[in-house]
Length: 475
Image (cartoon, rainbow, N blue to C red):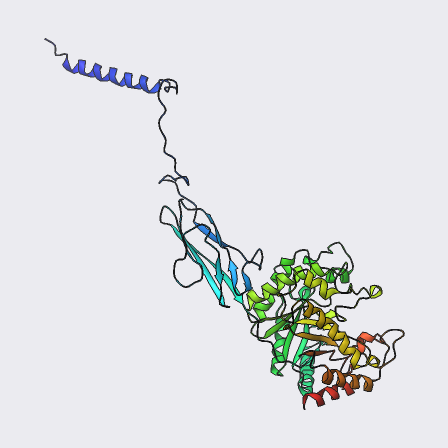
C-alpha cells in the first residue's frame, strides 16, 4: 500500500496558501457593510511617537522690535505679557517668571498684567515644555525708569565737530584744537549733530569710529557731549522721490520706529560717554521738518524715541527738540509755526521729555527784558499744561557779528555781541539752568550771517565774546 499522507498534507498546505492569497486580494469592506472604527482625538492634536517634530521655540510679547512703548515706561509701569509658541509636540506647559526673581508667577498662556513699581531693568522669562519633554526658554528685557539726574551744566556751545570737510574740522587735530579752546573758556558741554545719514547710511551699515574719537577727545578736555539725534537717513526718508538732498534729509521718516531704533542704537553705543540726547532740531520750521511742520507728527516721533533712549539707558536725559524762536510765536513768511509747544502738549508730549528746549534768538537792541519775555512765554505754556517742574533749556542763542542778520537788521559789532553774551549769561539764570551759545567758530561762507555767530574767528583767533564768556566762567 502506497503511503499518501505526505502528499495529502502537501496538497492541504497548497490549498491553504491559495485561499489566503485570494482573501488578501478581495475588496475592502465598505462603510455600509461594517460599523466605523472609533478614533481618538486630542487637543492640541497629539503627534505620533514615530513623527519627528520641529524644534520647540517660544517668543515673549511685547517685543521691542515692534515698538518701544510696550517694553519701556515710567514706573509704576504695567506690562501685559503673552507668548508665541511653535514647534515641538503639544500640549505645552508654561512657567513664567515675570520679574526675574527666580520664582514662578504664572502658568497661563497670557498671564495677568504685572506692575513694575521700582525703577530698574527687569528680565522676564518663559520656560516652555512640550509633551515629549522638549524644553525651551525665552527672555524679554523690560525697563521701568524714573526722572533722571539732570546735569549741572550752565555754559555750553554748539560746534559742528562731526564734519570732516572743508569749512569745518577736517582732522581730529582740529577737534583737539577746538577742545582746548573750549576748556580754556570754561565751557562744560558741546552740542553736536549725531547725523543719522552719516552714522547709519544704510539699514545694516554703521560708522561709529569718527564719532567715538570725537567724544573721547572732548572727554580728554573735560567737556561733556550733548547729542542731537538728527535728521533722516536717505533710506528712511519719506521723501524718497526727491532729488533735493535738503528735502530728503529734513523730511520726517517713513516709519517712526526706524528713528526710534536709530536712537536706541546710538544711546546703547554711547551710553557710557554721552548722557544727554535731543530729539531733532527745530521741527517747528519748514527748514528742518518737511514738507511742513506738524506738532502731532513730531510728538509721535518723540514718544517712540524717548522710550527707545530709556530702554537703552534708563538714566539718559532726553530733551525736546530745540524749537526755533520760543515755540509760541509764529511767522508764516519764514515757515515758522506758531503755538507749537501748545499743539505738542495737546498731542500728548507731556511725560516724553526731561527738559523743554527753545532757541530764543533776538537782536540785542531789543533789550534783555524782551529776551526774558520771550522765554517766559514758553514757560507759561508749560505751566498751563502742568509741567511746572520740567526745566526749560536754551539750546541755542546768539547773534552774528560784523554782518547783517537780515536785510533790515542793524549790524552788530564784535563788542556788541560780547555785551549781549554778558547779559544773556547773567540775567537769565532764574529762567533756565543751561544756556548753549551758537556757535563756537565762524564759517568761511562770505557775508552769510550763518557764518558769523562764532566765539572764534575762522582762524581760531578769539573774539571779544569768547573773552567775555571765559571771564564769566572763571568767577
